[in-house]
Image (cartoon, helix red, strand yellow):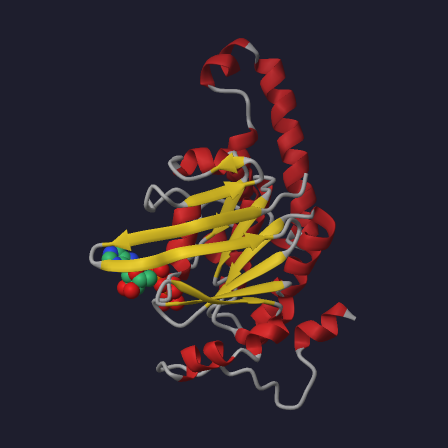
Length: 274
Ligand SMILES: Nc1ncnc2c1ncn2[C@@H]1O[C@H](COP(=O)(O)OP(=O)(O)OP(=O)(O)O)[C@@H](O)[C@H]1O
């Protein structure tokens, strides 16, 4: 079932800094929801709160469907179907694409070492089912050519794709994408954009996306939330947010500009959508 996420008064103190200040927002089921903001705005902190790595104030609430996520451990949050693709590559480099993706099936595997010893047959059957699912995902992400390649031998863009595959292998209900196209060339970005649209359309997974590439974000996101100094300053469609004076000020007032110019041309993700 497609599921949404709601935060109420999400507040996080880190040392002397209020990294998140009463952030209340709703991520609609089956949508791509972007979270943007200048450096230090609180985006990564937001993900860390959802994932169970950080402890927000007791008044805060984060619900996934009917489940309250706060006060759960990261492994318990993962069990509820929240998967995350991290900013840095976090693969087992000597393991192959297939092996790395099989690790994503861990939360879905019922067998453990003890039952393995007693029920070899069942374990083998279970392993086959997981293997089949991973093979389907390898096809979905067009990685057949590299399925048996050690991931440290793959180009950066392909390593990121394996990570996406491992997260999808968890059969998540919510996928957190932390700067998925940082450091990628245009072609690699186009691939990621295409896969994000396919994940939404075909797998119907709800996604929250953090990225500094505004073309990528604005073209993909159904809804955009903007943070500044831990406070939610705008929330709406890409068009609404881009025209919001507070958002423009937040970016232009900082060291980085919000570069939304597309050189008079249609954007590349826009072209993909047609
Ligand atoms: N471990 C920490 N201890 C103390 N302060 C922290 C810690 N991590 C982050 N902060 C502070 O919390 C605030 C929010 O940081 P966060 O990393 O969430 O921002 P961000 O929007 O993800 O930034 P970026 O775009 O640079 O990744 C910043 O002021 C940051 O300096």
